[in-house]
Length: 266
Image (cartoon, rainbow, N blue to C red):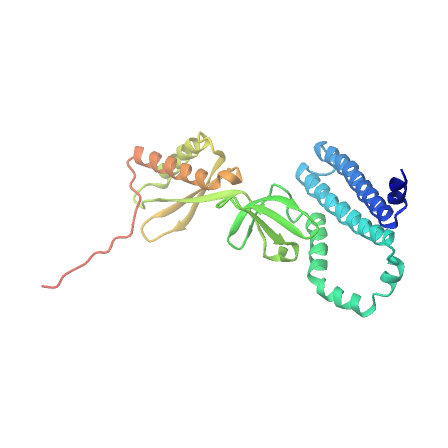
C-alpha cells in the first residue's frame, strides 16, 4: 500500500498522468468536433455546392487538428515545469529566424484559404500539375493532394504552387479527320452518328459534336468532346477512338494521311 502511495505521490508519475489526461482530452475534443463536421459534410447545403462543402469542412478539420496539437504541446510543457509564457515572450531573435524558415509554410496557409475562398478548385475537380493529372482528394492548410490517373499514386502539391495548377474542364477533345472529297453535309451526318455511338459507351458520360476545327494538309478536322469519370479518362479515350473508327469503317471512310510522291528523272 505504501508503494502505491509513493508512486502516486511521485512528481514524475503525476506529470505523466496529467500529460496523458491532457492528450486524451485533446483527442476527445477533436473526435467530437470531427464527427460534427463530418455530419455537416454529409448534409446537403443550399448555400454551397457539395464539393465546396467537403473542401471547406476538411480544411476546418485540418485547422482544428493543428490548433489542438499546439495547445496540447504547450499544456504538456507547462505540466513538466516549463514556463510557457516566458518561453513565448522570450523568443526574440530565434522567433525571427523561425519566421523566415516558416515563410513557405505561411505562404501555403494563405494560399490554402485563397483556394477555398476563390473556388479555385474543390474536392473532386480534376487538376493538372506538371506531368500529374487527377482528381483532388483533399485540400489542407499546407497541401493539396490529387490521385494521378496514370499511376494512381497520391501526389501532394504545396498550396503556394497554386499558380502552376491548371483546372481541367473535364472534357476530352478528339479531332476526327475527314477527306476533303467528302461533302460537309454528309460528314456532319456521320459525326452525329458517331456521337450516338459514343453515348452508348459504358465509360463515356456525354458526347457532343463541335464542328470543323482545322483545315489540315490532307483532311478537314471535325471535333467531338466527351466527358467521363476522371479515373476512366485513358480507357474512355481508347473506347471513343474505337467507336469512331468503327463508325467511319462502316461508312467506308478511310482516314486521310499525308503522302509523299517521288519522281525519278530518266
